[in-house]
Image (cartoon, rainbow, N blue to C red; front, side, top):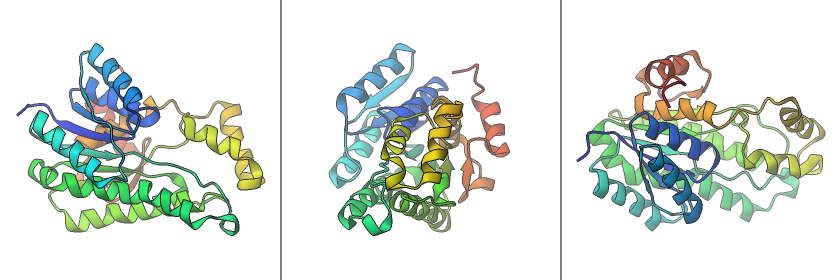
Length: 263
């Protein structure tokens, strides 16, 4: 059994998940990477290893129960422990008004964004109880302030916030937090801009086009650093909350455990 903490990160092949994995490995964690794309996942793992970190890529889909069981089992077999779970895998489509919604597509999104997090959590719980570990569910600001066209995504993230609160009530040995990364420069932002006002609204489209034009999109490493630290060091005073990467309590943890000059 390794002395280093072990994190499982879903949606780790690109964007926020990959940035979080690189930072977590850089500050001393074993990272177990899960995503559907085996090639992209291996690229991230290779980069982490080249920098001296420990990364184990395990391709899988959070909507498949067997894949979720396998990722946790492989993590325990390799490292002997699970100290943190970051439920980051997520999709944003369908971007559509409710009147134009396809319930089957809503269902597919919910299976990734909500049920996928539930599956991973259930598989990891026995080991997280043992380590008194942490669960961080990656949510979104739209869970609090929905926008036109974001009904499915906002509903899934709002449900994830409540799921986090339920974990706090039911799993006292584990610290559970929901995380709000802010507007991050990822493929998801490309999808939102491409959707156009017809699928959202003039206001929503202008807002997201403005993020790009004004350069206000965050590099994934900015919220990724906070996400990595929360998965390793989140404190009881923020459990159950939806916290931003720039929350002063989160910033204090980052400054203590992972200042930007360390990894």
